[in-house]
Image 1 (spheres, helix red, strand yellow):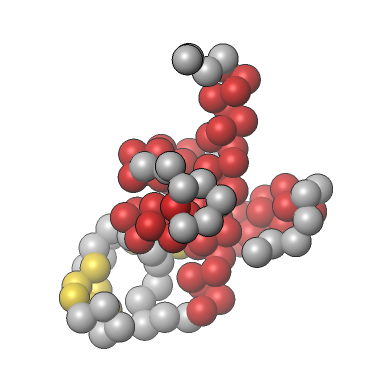
Image 2 (tube, rainbow, N blue to C red):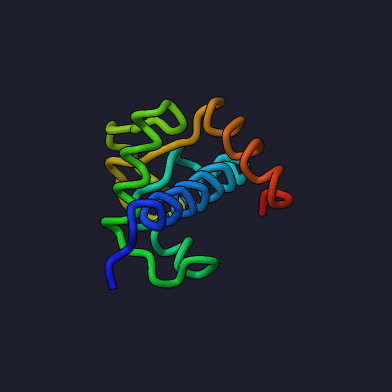
Length: 112
């Protein structure tokens, strides 16, 4: 079954909100590396509200978030001691992204 444009837009918005929740959570946990890789975002999101989400869907949500200033891309390689490896392209939430997340989740409840 093919989604209507309105259904596709709603799905993308839900995916974007989940990505922002995970980026916000990662920032609050203050790990040894700033930002989260798309594959890690997909794993974390799939454990919760969107178990069927793919890396491609996460990447699309990230592209839209970056284009709107709600997330930023970090491309510098950095060693993550907690992971025991170097991480490359990753993403972090911006102040505007936090404001958007609060505004949108304020309608539906608290930020998890």
